Amino acid sequence: MRTGSETSISLAGLARIEGVVTAGGKPVAEYTYEIEGIARRAQAVRDAGGKFVIERIDPGTYTVRIRSAAGLGNAKVTAEAGKTAQVAITLAGATKVRGRLVDAAGQPVASTPVLPMPARPEGEHGSFSFEGPPPTSGADGRFELEVEAGEYELLVLGGTSGPTARKRFTAVSGQTVDLGDVTVAAPAPPPASPAPK
Image (cartoon, rainbow, N blue to C red):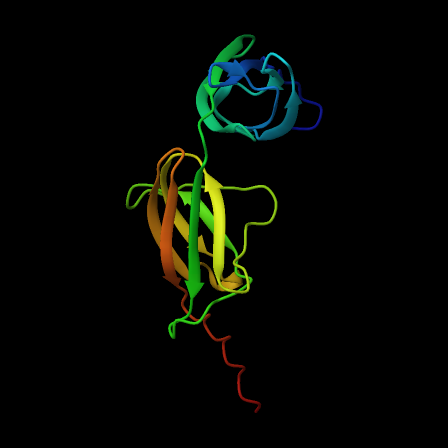
C-alpha cells in the first residue's frame, strides 16, 4: 500500500469445536487434549461428562488427540467459520513400545532420546512436533514409551547430526511391541578445523 491510500480488509469468522471423550462406554472425566492443524493448542480438561469446548480457532481441518490414564485416542474434524464442529472420541488402551539401544559392539547406549514418529509413505514429507523432552534410554540402554495404534518409525536422536538410527513398527491397541536391540550409529565426527597458515 502507498502512504495515504485506502484499502479494505475482510475478516474471516472463527470456528468452534465441541467434543466428548469416552472409554468403555463411559465419559472420561480427566484428560488432556491437543489439536494439530492450522493452529495448535493443548489443555487439561476436568469434566464429569467427558466434554470439552475449543473456542475461537481458525477454520480448517484439525486432528484432536486425547491422552489420559484411561487410554489414548484421536479424530479428525473440520471446523467451519461461524459454526460449531462436533466430535466424539473413544479411547483405547495405549500400546507399549520397548527396546534397547546398543552400539556396533553390542554395548548399551544410555541417556539417548528416542521418538516415535508417525510413519509416512516413501517419498512423502511432513512435519511432526511433540511437547516436552522425548523419552531417553536408561543406563542399560533400555527404553519404554506409549503410543496410539498405528504405523510408526522410531527415531534415535543424535543431536545436530540428525537421527542415528531408525526402525519402523506397527502398534496394536493394548499390546506391547518389543523392538529388541536397536543399533545406534556412532555420531559423525566434527568437521576438521582448517590448518593455520
